[in-house]
Amino acid sequence: MKEEIRNICKDAIEVWGIEPQARIAEEEAAELIVALEHFRRGRATMDEVRTEIADILITATQLAIIFGEDEVSAEFNRKLARLKARIEESKRNINKRN
Image 1 (tube, rainbow, N blue to C red):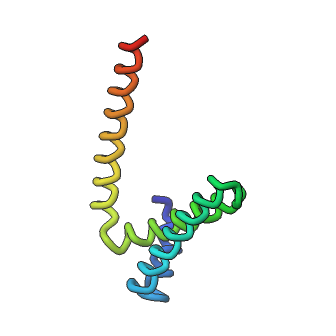
Image 2 (image 1 turned 135 degrees about the vertical axis):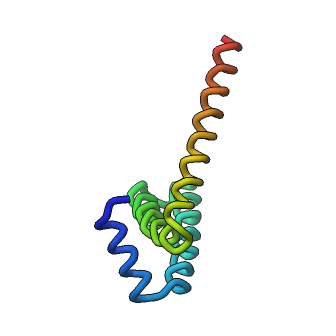
């Protein structure tokens, strides 16, 4: 994680506390869900969705700090490897059909 981003997120946790920042993460997740649904219906712009994604990335970084950066990173890498394997399997299945 970039050190400047990490430091800003750590400062937010130190200034406002773990519980409030975790609640903000929940709110931001809900706002992204709403923005995506509105976008799907033509009631939100891509910029509005991008704003909510940025908020999620910031609050997710704070959550990673709260719950253990190394452990979250290890889980991220495990899930990314699993996704890669699933993609490769899907590509093989598509190629078999063609």
